[in-house]
Amino acid sequence: MKVITLNKDEFRKCCRDLKTSVDASGFRFDTLVGIATGGDFVASEFEFESTLSIRRQRSLTAAKQGGLGTLISRLPRRINNLLRMAEASCRELCDHIFPPHAEELQLSPEIKTKLCGARKILVVDDAIDSGATAASVVASIKKAAPQADVRLAVITVTRPHPLIRADYSIFGPRTLVRFPWSADSRQS
Image (cartoon, rainbow, N blue to C red):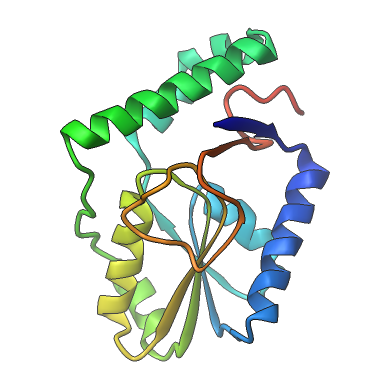
C-alpha cells in the first residue's frame, strides 16, 4: 500500500489523463455525473458543458471534516501516511466481517429527468474504496436510464476487490491519494 500526495496541478494532470483515457477508448459520453464531493472536482476538470452531481458521503468522511480535520492537518506527513494506511487496512478488515453493500439511492426528480434522454453516461469520482458508494450511484443511474451505457472513471482504486470495477482509473489497487481538498492536505 502506498500514499500519493497530489497538489492542485498534479490533480489537474491526473484528471486530464483520465479524460484522455476515456477519449482513447472511443466512449463519447453525452452526460457527465460527479459523485459529490470528490467526483465534482474531477468532473469540473473535464470541462464538460453540464455536469450532474449526486451526493453520497461516508460517515467517516464527515467526521474528518469536523474538529478532527484540524488536528489531522497539523500532524507530520509521515504520521498522516501511517494513519491513512491504518485506516484503509481497518476498513478492509471490517469489510471481511461486515461485507459492504450498495444501498439503494433515491435520485431527485430533476436528476431523473436529465438522465432520461442520456445515451452514454460517464460517472466520475476521486476514489473507489469498498465500492459501495460508486455501485449505489451507478445502479441508481442504470435504473433511471436503462437505455444508457454507463461507465465509471476514478483517479484511484484503494482496494483490490471493490464492489464495482472502474472502467477507467489512473492509480491501481492499494494506492491511497491525498487530494488537494483532503483533511490532511496542507495546501491553500
